Image (cartoon, rainbow, N blue to C red; front, top):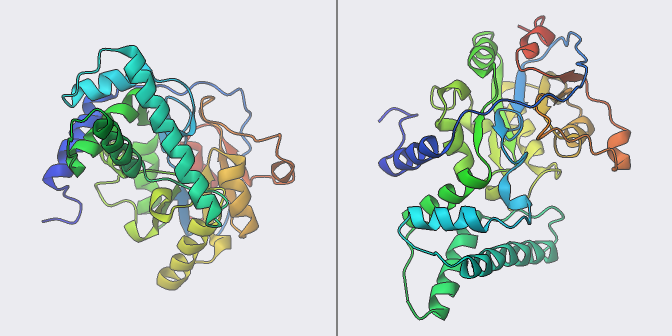
Length: 308
């Protein structure tokens, strides 16, 4: 089997994502780009939501406490569980959100400042508890839980490739730059990338050893832990230093701040008003200046042309 060929289960989930999403366009930010030539760049690390992918909600969905009862009802119906009582659905969503808060609390108690939950665990535990209370005794397999999580996520946070990826990413790769990802993410994030050829995920543009997903680490950005490990791997496998590694993201706190502290040049991607995060209320962010500010992905090769 070729390295990037999805398994049957994965292919079904990717097909589900494609069936649920629809084209999205970025919303103008009114930001003026700051472009200058950066010399010596050998690797580029991207964020996902708001950077590689347009995010309909502006970020991965479980970060919000908004009531998504209608989306939940549609998601469970899609997997064969009919919930037509809005009060029941609202109670389930409240339990789901409470489980996320409880798991984060437990991780903070264990010393993790920026805890990350595993959304599969959340769905499994809430579903099991809920059905036990209803004396139904249902057993939920991994395929069912993953399908339900995707049905819900794509409804509350639809995604679409950021314009320009299909041109920019192959140009970077062809020029010899190494591409990776450091993202707050869940299991469905790489599946969402795989759903769109423009991202180059299934065609091998990204080095999978240089891709970090927060749910696997139980820790999210702005923690620098994931980035530190990826920078170590860049050094070990490729001899690339932080000063030669460009970090691209839409969030001053989550992306720009930790990368700057570790000695990386940075790009604040101000391409979509939904997801642009200046974090002006954070004093530590006001003290950091990104190396570049881009409003279109197509500006990236221009900025590192000398490196290419």
